[in-house]
Length: 244
Image (cartoon, rainbow, N blue to C red; front, side, top):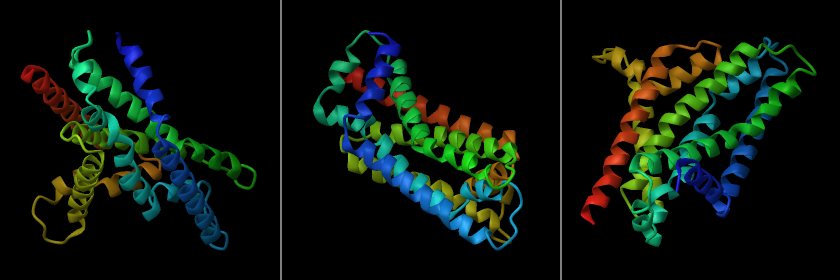
């Protein structure tokens, strides 16, 4: 069993569950509703070129999609294997724990990207009526995928900690919401270490990406958290192997 076979297995497994289609459907509906409301709002406000796409990545509905649907994507990665009793078979297969974790993580991240794929039609539609600046559009998607890479890694770790998918989703949601709320302290006057809170402020990061500003600091933050979460996931799976 090699890595690419495992990756294919994990990715196709998503589409055997109705949850996958529910996630894609809800995401498409909410994004379409958000885009429609943004256009309605800006239709009489003289929006600048590219403004609808810039707003798409910073609305409350954007965060609703990220915070509620990402846990549904990752909850099954390891929890389902534990519940079904197939994880023991998987960890005894001729593939390392690291490759198992990376395969599950990459498959979940690919599905996360697919969830946002329908929104690629929006800038195409906008070009029929107004010029669209590709810079904010590309940076907005860059920020969304980079942040998603971090959040998906956290979800995979939470899934490895339990055999119940619902519990995994709840823990993931709580962890992501804690990170989101921690960043909001950067807006509170007189809070000590405000620079630290600004560094982890997910909302501020996405506002910058949506305006076309690609800052390496949040990218480093996302990559660091993702690497740590995946490392811990490997340790959790490795501990289960040694307990055998």
